[in-house]
Image 1 (tube, one colour):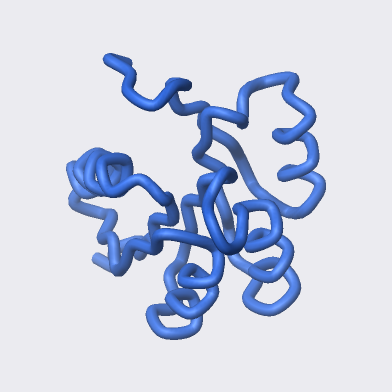
Image 2 (cartoon, helix red, strand yellow):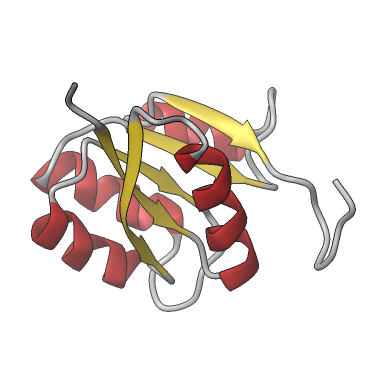
Length: 115
């Protein structure tokens, strides 16, 4: 059985850890790396060649939409936007889908959320 390899990109260490837990609860998914920003994500895409990338939007150095553009132009693969900014009907969501994201998942908003 081939596992689906995933790169998680989020500037929050807490979110990277929680997303990893959720994904790796499925035996068919293996997180191969995590990145703190878009620049690091591009390096990790080359280094680890993940099948799928989860991508936050608000990050330092290089934001998720800019990273998404680079990924789709240079290393096309499925990218799922995972951000408090990506909700159904959001302009940011439409922009991400237009740039090539395959789907979006909304995260709870705010610095700390019980959701």
